[in-house]
Image (cartoon, rainbow, N blue to C red; front, side, top):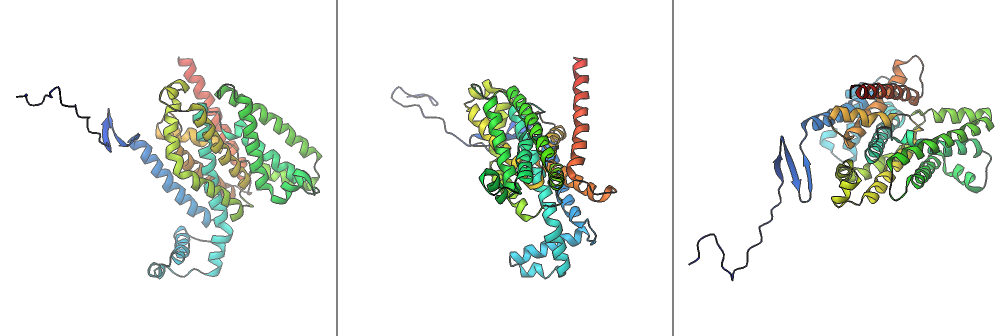
Length: 394
């Protein structure tokens, strides 16, 4: 007889049964696991993200209301819903809405919505791009505008504006034919590649990356200033207006590349966030966890550069949105690293709110990039003062 609960020499021990744990608890808060992926429930992070999403929708509707033709947010929502129900062939719901007039549809869909949608997606792209670069480099100053990505896109665009008018052949002539947005996108990607080549030495060094970006940005600014001195008055005025960053001349054609890139990148945001969690602990810890550190850094930085370049190609170099949004979102959510979704939503809110302020609150309409640069400069001063106080107490 063999006692209950024991095995004989001839019996093979059974392998413990594997179960997938969908929810469990970690010290202090619940965790949710699905296979190899897991996350921790953070009520503050979730609440802030939901509030930012609702705020972005409200600001989007309010931005469409601004203008000489008066519209209320409820009426704007009805006009958009009517078009949506028509597209989905929902006749029952469509009959519940008052028929919009032709002028209302023209104002909403052709005049104001392209500007508002561009503000939402460009702000989200810049906020997400800044969160990625700051997380990968573990440096709060590592944003696309400080690293020189937006400067590279601006340099290529100014080249096309100044030299493209009389160019019929060669690279400049070809870029002049395809337009400023494509040229800005190409300039941003080439600048990102140059910065990566300078910063890479047996792996990506975050300090060398920031230093290389500052050097490249200074050289490109000198090139832009040289082009501005050689341009005629009309081209120089056009280039200066574009360099200030504005949503005035936006249309669906310019907004479409940013919309597609943000929508395509949305399904991989979860994968990116999990990869960033290990990288925050340092490259050695990430390698010990089985992560391909160099490959992940390259993939994240390429995606970040593409987001920033496409955003600049749509609205010009709007400064400091990519720098400010991740830092404020990080403080609102109480996280050790910039949260991706919250950073994107805050970037949308910041850019749309700044555009509304330049349209209605100021006595004259100014490019939105001037206001965001002023806000970003004040926030940078705040960070420096905060760091000095922290250093003095240590």
